[in-house]
Length: 80
Image (cartoon, rainbow, N blue to C red):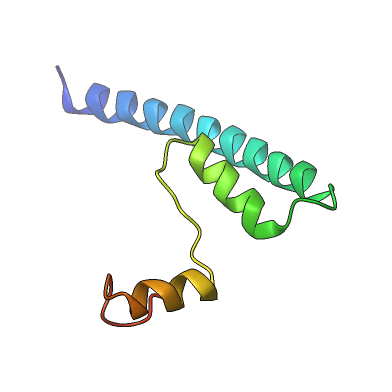
């Protein structure tokens, strides 16, 4: 395979992946905006929901959870 053909092939692949990434980001933004229009869903809840749906193992840490895990010795310093 010639070097020029290899570079052109990678360039096309990168352009396709960038388009896919833009579509995904647009979808995530629309999902976030849609979820936060409900009065019961706050921005933090929408963030955690979207991250979980994307396959991330997430758990929201608020000030109360932070204080409890510090007090019982799970962590040595505050997380947030």
